[in-house]
Image 1 (cartoon, rainbow, N blue to C red):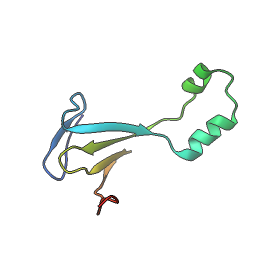
Image 2: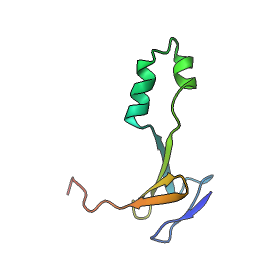
Image 3: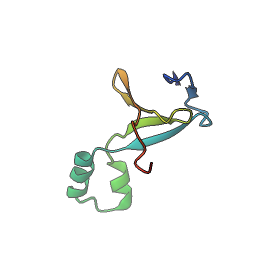
Image 4: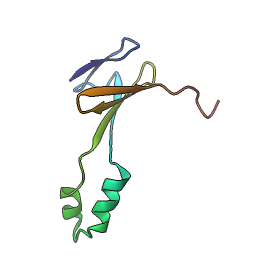
Length: 82
């Protein structure tokens, strides 16, 4: 997959030099899995919910969330450490 960020940075799925790639789980899905009491680590891994994929542009630090049929883009207004 190729995605061009609003800043113009071209990000390619197979090449991480222009972006960072992350995945995450919704808390509710993860807690439901834990409550189902998987008996082994392998069972836990096999039953993990589908992850949400998101990328961080290395040029402008925008976060791109890949949703079904669309990409949501976020830019942090201010760094908390400033």
